[in-house]
Image 1 (cartoon, rainbow, N blue to C red):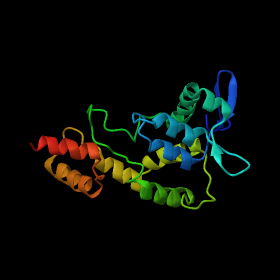
Image 2: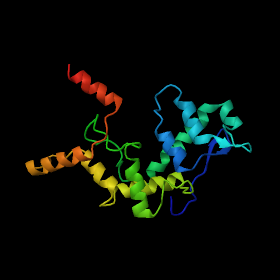
Image 3: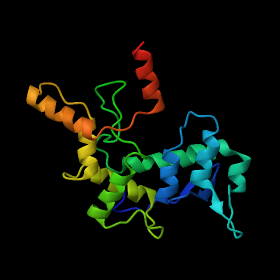
Image 4: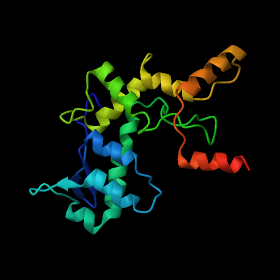
Length: 199
């Protein structure tokens, strides 16, 4: 629990404990890795477990390089647990009513919204290299910003989520206007799907 426990900074595998990269920048980089892509395991380990040596170069700890699978599992569990800081549903997920619902959040496209909301709501300048925020704290603040009325993230995500049933014509038109204003750029998969549907 954030208010009682110290924020976790290590992971364990095979009875050995090693530090994990706690900063939000490396963890956002891990969010951008497609976990199903070839080479994803290596990229994720470099994001989450690489440490800087005395010579300034990053390398994986010997234990991780020797047996990467359990360390990757432990690091991803630690990383993913940060989104559980506010257990009231998943505001960054596609709408639960649709199995293949629309994306409501994108780390790259929404970076400016995250930056602006953190500055306005918390006084944290995420663009300042001196700004160091633990990943678990970052996620708690991000999830709170999403649920804060008047935040840019709240406006964008609510506009992108499907409108509930029973809305009248005026509400649907207004929602469509907001959805167009806040629309995410299409992914390559979405463009491919649109192209296939047009034939």
